[in-house]
Amino acid sequence: MAAEMVAALFNSPYALTVLAFLLGVMVLVSSSKRNRNSGRQGQLRLPPSPPGLPVVGHLHLLGSLPHRSLRALAATYGPVMHLRLGRVPTVVACSAAAAEEAMRTRDLDFASRPRLLMVDRFYYGTGGIGFAPYGEHWRQARRVCVTHMLNARRVASLGGVRAQGAAALVDRVHRHAGAVVNISDNLIVYSNTVISRCTFGDTDYGVEGGGGGARLRKVFAEIEELLGTVPMGETVPWLRWVDVVTGLEKKARRVFEEMDGLLERAIADHRQRRRAGAATGEEGDFVDVMLDAEELDTGSIKGIILDMLAAATDSTFTLLEWAMAELISHPHEMRKLQDEVRAAVGPAAGAVVTEEHLPRLPYLKAVVKETLRLHPPTPLLLPRETLEDTRLLGYDVPAGTRVLIHAWAIGRDPATWGSRAEEFAPERFLGYDLRMGQDFAFLPFGAGRRGCPGVGFAMMSNELALASLVYNFDWEQPGGRMPPVDMSELHGLSVRLKAPLLLVAKSWSPVSGMES
Image (tube, rainbow, N blue to C red; front, side, top):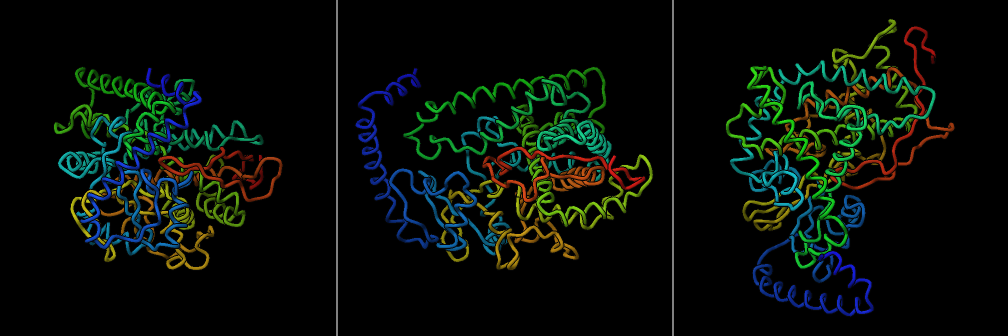
């Protein structure tokens, strides 16, 4: 009913008058609040801030690609900026020095997460692991994840799942060899399949193949899009009705109900299997491990599963898609990588890339790291929130401030990466003993106590898939188009290619070294 009433308002000849009146009231209320807060603000040395607007603050400056807009603002206002996103005070850190102070020197001060409307909805109010506020729930959930699900032994034990996923990826591409292949879709299937099998075991719940798989991949994509959306009601509560009018609220409800049905079914099936005496604990899948953890209730388990399915799938797919796009755009680097992988695997008939080959592929690792530098899966990382009044590079940051670590800008900073900071140059990582999460000029997965716990698993999956694609195929653009490919971006929870990556794959024979 509210949506119809608002739609009628927009279609009436009095719409502009009514909206002007409403905005006027909002400006007065906003001004009143600012006046009440001006005394304390005047005593603080806040970071530099661009001019803002009443009510919306600096929201209008973000544009459709916030990571690019914020870097442009930092060029004027410095590596630490203070913004007001509606009612939300926000600090943006755009330098390695600022990131290191926030994520190492003062890590505890910056360790929490803000409460976000979309996160509360999809993560059952818990935040899973990645979005959870700092506290006992986060500590328990992370301990279960790190100790029982992502330890080195378990990551190694899942090698068979990754190998099967990579083989299936190669087989799907082989079936279309010589024709145009939607490599983006194939990478999504690979990512979904590997993560879902590690999470659910052999039951795919419609994730693999068929119409059910396509439907659920669409749901995952919608969740990631919604998690990357900031509802108007979150930043400007008076405009919450806009989320109804635009259909955002209806879409969020539909997607949540569909995903919740999947999670309910998965947990119920695992509980039934456990009652029947099937394997549990360390020998079970991720859901079994979580059901063994007494400190996790059903909502917490669902939130962690969603972290695995949506966030892990998205980061794997996004990295592989950007890596293939960069390699197609840089034929010399593509050939160098193919030569390395093909030499390591050898010319034997039926040879396949295995995880045993990966330690002997330094250029492959350099390609992956260079892709992560230029295209971190979450360019602004997940937002943090200060637990108490603190400081950042000499500026005051009050408690409750939202903090964005701009990994994308830091990874392209010429002060660190030199005059070729914008170029794809994997050789910069050869001989560079870089440990992710320890070098604050390179933060694709965050750092400190809120760094991603699944880096080891993700890197194995990414390297195996990429090596398999460049070993088995020679690649080119459709119609013989010359590089580069279209690198236009689409913003969501992650930043991915705006258009699907369409390529021609020509099968390569290891025996003859010729196309087949």
